[in-house]
Length: 235
Image 1: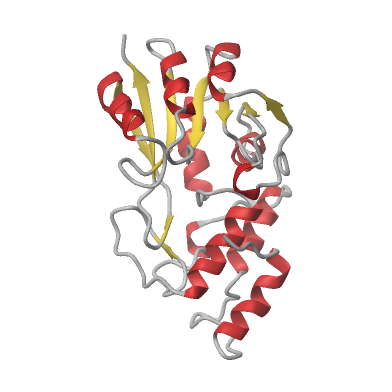
Image 2: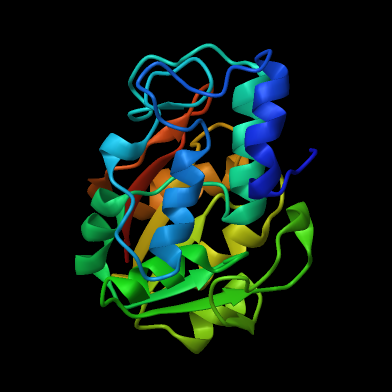
């Protein structure tokens, strides 16, 4: 995947669109990336009405809403988002929905942006990552990272809710995380069940060893089906 610096994105989009630099509501096509940076730097939270929902180049409201057309523009926007922050798109509703289930230990935290947003909202989240450098993230760009693999992080912080976002496709570390959890423990999982995150065995473990507690608001990029579920480990 080819990543762009956020500062370069507008110019690249203009080139793709033949010089058109506005979407029909008059907002900048990269405005929601700037809004996330504003939030991470301590400013106002990113709101749903700031997202380019149902536009041909970006987002939809949730995994069950219609998907917009996939274009080179949407690919470029998503690539820039991933490189700058991480895989999921979160808004104020997402963080507000997560907060009651803290404190958290985030596994595979990448840039640490989820833990940073939870902390800004008054939550308690310890960000951890094995530090493999996968996906080209700037590890710890937004939050100090403890270098721990997922299972080790769960064992080090057994009383915290495990926050796991987009576990690596085909990699068994996500299975090791849930196997290390104690009965009654909570897992906040962002991913595609049966899709492009985790493993088939992991999906089976979630179905067989956990019960649903809550589903939290999560906008998604067009063509994807990730969702945020809070689950409780069965005995």
